[in-house]
Image (cartoon, rainbow, N blue to C red; front, side):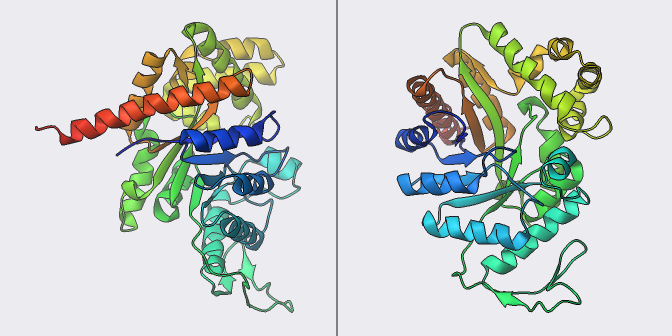
Length: 353
């Protein structure tokens, strides 16, 4: 097994399209575009597709509920056609703050909605006539003048990756998806995620190795590990305090399952009380360091080895740099380190017991 590198590109940043093109030149395996409450994910990927030839292109992630399953399938098939088969559809439920506050769509039954969306997308992309009777979606709409329709676009395969943190959604991902998109991840506690994924995959007649296991990390090459780690830890205060309600925060729950329950609860309390500076300071530096690649090259190499040994197959990286030149240089150094780690893995596998 080897470790691949995907690059997260945010169209809000300067030189984002040039960075994507440089990433392909350097040998990055995939490029991911996020979607939250700024730009959509599909339009920038179409621009990247027109400027690249080899690199895979992925939504990271398209929010379920923001589009109908049929619209998701149409967009995915469009990008698969435009990119000549390089597209990956990354999907996720987001959360009630975004879905209900931004899209005006009720946030309910997220796991069931994910299952039905995947099944509908696969009916459409396979070129079958769309007729579906689910608990969330019923197509054609009962009692309407709708009729089962077959896409006029050519059938194609669209890999579907699911962003999942909770046990139920992890199990669904292991059962149905082509890949898993994760964050809030420590290699040392990978079983929290890979356990449910693997059990469900085996129950579905396959194995965990059938999934591309994608984990998001920031990358910062620096000699001042403590200062960088503290800065990245501070950034988690928003995640723990604002990305969810007091009773339901997917990220907090994921960190709690990895031993940080008291810490994230206290950060959330301080944030809710309006003391955001104290909330940031309360995030353990271990979280900033353990979920990212931070330090000089030797330290980053060791962490890459930890991710690889844990079973991660793709790191979706967010490089830190002041300008395009620094971003490209850092990405090139990272790829050199990954090649070193992968080369050692291959040599280890070929060495006598």
